[in-house]
Image 1 (spheres, rainbow, N blue to C red):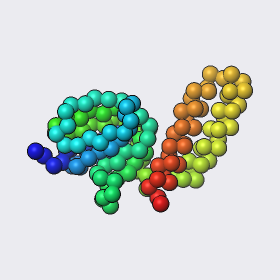
Image 2 (image 1 turned 180 degrees about the vertical axis):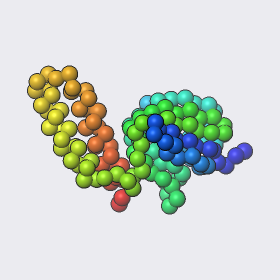
Image 3 (image 1 turned 120 degrees about the vertical axis):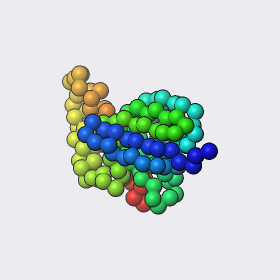
Length: 140
């Protein structure tokens, strides 16, 4: 029985991560899930939230924000496709706070005018909140 699985995280621009890991933790529709080696095949959409490569208490683990995507895993490999992922250490907290204020104001204005942009601003606001939460979660 293998102790690691091969993880590939691909974005439209590059391969974000490719290598062996003992666990990948991320959020799917049913909640957070840990993908271990030798897992029964799974295919799912990924929800916005945190993604951890390796055990969270391992200093070598990589903590990330992911904005959604798709995951396929089987006994030997895990493939993740996303267009929005960033390491927690690379999150610009000031920008995320600035985005939060900007999208709160934009959402309020859109709701007042019954704008079609309401849903777009809700998603952008959720992304800003998640980035701030993940930064704070991993920078204690």
